[in-house]
Image (tube, rainbow, N blue to C red; front, side, top):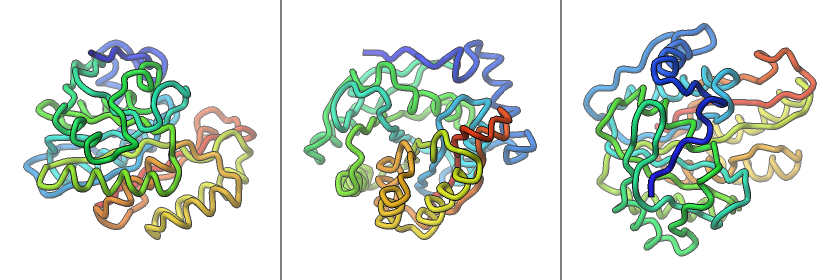
Length: 274
């Protein structure tokens, strides 16, 4: 089964040329990293954390993560782990087979890896339903196509169950399944949602501090204690549990910087785990 885009034309441009030009400007803009990715060869496996809002709000922040990943060269496989906003589908939903379509073309799903994940992690299921209307994975694929080009496959994982222990176990399973392969892992998440500017900065800093100290326990304690509405903590914890390196925070921003609405902001961050 092939997966058709649902965020095209809303979260990002639907015209291929416009989309490519838009992503290019996100990299080169003052809010972006200021240069274009140019991956060559392969230096090592890497994890990144990047937001999944509309490109106008969070795209330049995401670009920082993709530039950092590109410095490690071209992977053969990219695992994209996103939160389930819709409530449809299985608890840990792995898209089984086929291609994901975007305006920039099709990207094949690595069936051998998707099957291996389900075989090695009993709570994961091969499932289409969770992905059909979910944007948190889709919005990263045009960035991957722009950054890497062609020649890579994806493994989309949508997390409804983001409990700490489940996320850590998924990370351990992914580490086993991907052993010996050349890969990137993308954790898709936004930070705190729809509070004022001061609260957003305070709560986002707690998340950033936990991630930069590589402390999954602190991440979950902070979320519970401060009632932080980060949408993808399990996605981040999964990548952290893979022991790919120490997280490096690259960029933090808020939606208010674009919308001028500082009463109901969403926070965004990008990081590289390498």
